Length: 402
Image (cartoon, helix red, strand yellow):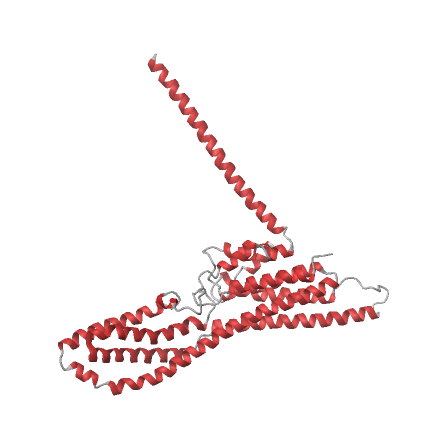
């Protein structure tokens, strides 16, 4: 009988375990279903947001700010930055500095064995020193041109922010008093999308994460799903400088500017197509369209300026000439220093070599400042500035109020 009782207890425990497993599966399924429901509710909520809420949508602005997480911000009044390596473009300096270190070690060992070697190398000072003058001029010009290009880049995107701020105010006033709020809704959304499209054009293969989700978050509820797909789709499957999103946004803005200017509702006098009211309305529409179109032309020009800087580094002949004679001078100068002072001069020689090579590294870092390097421009932050300016304009002019 004891042997007959054990199967019963085992059977009951097995059924209980199956019931517990089933309940866990049901719980997991319900949690997954609830998470999908929450995502669907969030997507539906995004699609039903008003213009002001879509522009100021916090997850969207946070995604734009996260694009600049790698960019350095520092205290200009502090010297504590000198103790760090981040932001110095040190990766570019490692290879030449390592070669110079090996060069110094080899020659220090050889000259230590050869007694007459240091005397011969020291006598070469008259041949090595003249190289410093052309190298200095080349480095000064190189760093100066890089600084100008960096400032031109900053000025171009700053002008983009300024024009977006201006054009959204002009359109808000025109649409408010012409009762075309539907047009302003679309127009404002595309204005806020233009700096994002420009940023993506300048960073074609550098999304903020490995998938495309981050760039979708940057747009969020600002545009419809169809417009978002068009805005994020590159030509020929992607690649450097193949995004045409700015052109797409500019075309949409021009189309809306025309409709906004010449389709301001029904005429007051329907029986007289050439009444004074129609003529006045046409004149106002012409002036408004000219003003909006000029601002859109300026936006296209700022984008073109940044495109030119991003696509054209300094000429190859200049860069290769500079680097050839810079390295030639450093190797010969290090040889001379080793011949004069031996092993003890290696740290000072490497520090001085770092100083000269760092000028070239800094110029390379600054001449096309649109990527995600530590010293590049905070393009995401500028997109947020446009969004906040647009939101303030909507509130100030009272476009949303009846």
